[in-house]
Image (cartoon, rainbow, N blue to C red; front, side):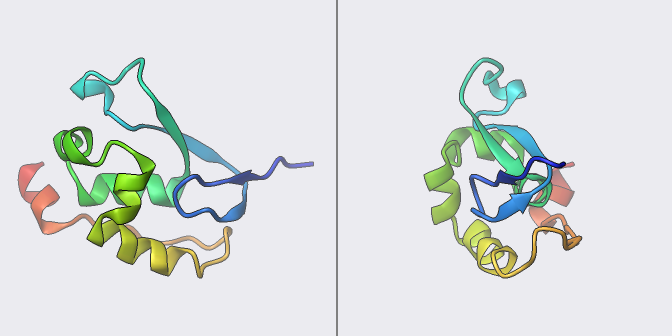
Length: 99
C-alpha cells in the first residue's frame, strides 16, 4: 500500500511523493533552515519561475509564495488537476536568461 501526502503549497491530497524544498535555498545559506514538503510539480514550477537568489530574498515562506502573482496563477491551475496528472513545466524568460 502506498502512503499518500499533501503538498504544502497547492494543498492537493493523494500525492504519492513529496520533495523537500528549502525555503531559503542551500546555495543562499539555507542548508539547515526551514523546509516545505511540495509535490514534484509545484517544486519544479517554483524553480522554473525564479532563481535561487529571488527565492531566498523574497519568496522564503509558503505564504509569500502563495501571494506571488506568478505562483498564484500556477496554483489556480494545478489545484484543479488530479494528483496523478503529469503537468508540463516551462521556465520563465527571466530564469532562462539568468541560467
